[in-house]
Image 1: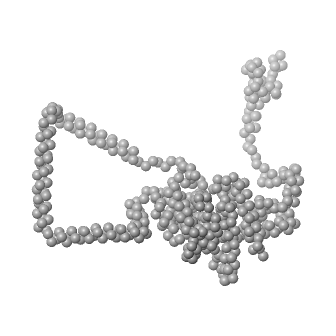
Image 2: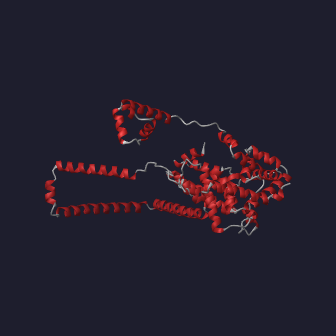
Length: 191
Length: 274
């Protein structure tokens, strides 16, 4: 079933359709926000706020646009607004800036790395993930959202431009610069 | 003589454009030959304008560019190092041949392209994170589902209450109080049936007396009004039926108007959402 069909059912008030939309997008939306604000609790609140806003406005959603673009737009706006308000700038890959106890740090830290096949592979994957997450967190927020939308969510440049209300050329520039910065930051990992 | 004044090809053009001078236009009205020529020309032009536009083959622009001055520009581009756009195309596997040629010969760009591909692969392999369990429930508690049924509302309210220990405690307290008071009432009533029966009889007797006293007082007050006698005299059976019919019609019209007023609006064009 396509997103548009599920949205049509949601507009009729079917709770199951709402649940399906949440199920499909909770991970991508939460991940995007988490990588933007780098605070698990804050990301949880913002992701929740994103879905509440989107689902309460489902009647005004225009079906000619992709639902994914719409929800990512709301999520990105929520994250950017939060960053502007609080300027969360500490690397919370090691836990949220306000995390004081060991439990808080554990609860708010990004969980990176796959379940590796071997302990060595797992260690490498975790290390690699950590470096990449650190590098991403050092990007400017506008670069970060562009690079996430492009390479984690797989959106086209045109979709990102529409979603972020930016000219296409600006989006390309942001992504190229972001990749350039990431390459530089991760250069020491090569070979 | 008249043939010397026939319209030439340039004048036919002017005529078709609506720019032919007045005296030459009046010639058309009298000259069958020129009128026929003008109509035939107009028809040919109309047919030409109706011809479909044909699209060239897919590589038309590339072929043109290869044959004009851009070939020089492409050659210059072939010497330039990779840009962000080139890297995009390289990752997608759609790099043009001249740039591929540059890549084969330029170690700097090769290193850059390899690093780019590795980076993109790493980015695309980044994991997605899960929010805490119960995320959907927490969202749905705050969402106003359109046309929610009474059962749905009750279930939502119950979910909301059951999640908060304070509200659970309050609800349990209220439930205990209500249950306790009902049980106490039943226990007391079963032991004091005579008292309840006596009180019921007393209440019913006094209520009846009060009701009929009220009816009598209202009738007396009505009869004392100045308009009462004339109104009573004027109330013929026909008028009663007419007034009753009018009242029923007004009531029906009022109900219909209210229904229209309270009806949900038909779905209109979707609004833009920022």
